[in-house]
Length: 162
Image (cartoon, rainbow, N blue to C red):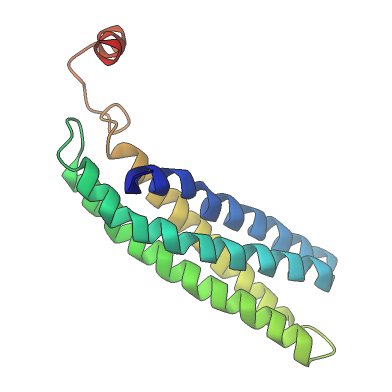
C-alpha cells in the first residue's frame, strides 16, 4: 500500500469521527448526562488520533500524484494549507477531549463550560475537515473544479479500459 492509498483510506475516520462526536456532545448538552459527554469526548479523541496519520501521509501522497495528468497543483496547495489548520483544530480537540475525562475524574460534577467548549471546537473542526476533504477531492478531478475535461465521460472510460 502506498502513501496515496493510505491517505485516501484513512481520511474518512477523522471526518466521520468528529461528526459522530458532535452528535454525542450535542446530546450531552441537551440531556445533561455525563455518559454522553464521555462518549463524545472518547470519539473526538479517537478522531484526533486518526487525523495524525492522515496528515502525515499527505506529503508523500502529494509526491506520488503531483505529476499525473489532471492534478491541480494550486488546489493541492490549498488542500495542504487548510489541512494544517484542520490538524491544529483536531489536536486541540483531542486535548480538550482528554481534559474532559480528567475533569470528570477529579470533580464529582462535570463541567458544562468544558463540554460547551468541546462542542464548539468539534463543530469548527468538522467544518475545517469537510472543506479540506472537498479540496482534496478536487485535486485529481477537474470536473469537480468546474473545469471542462475536453473529452466525454465515455471517452474517458474507454481510455481507462485500454
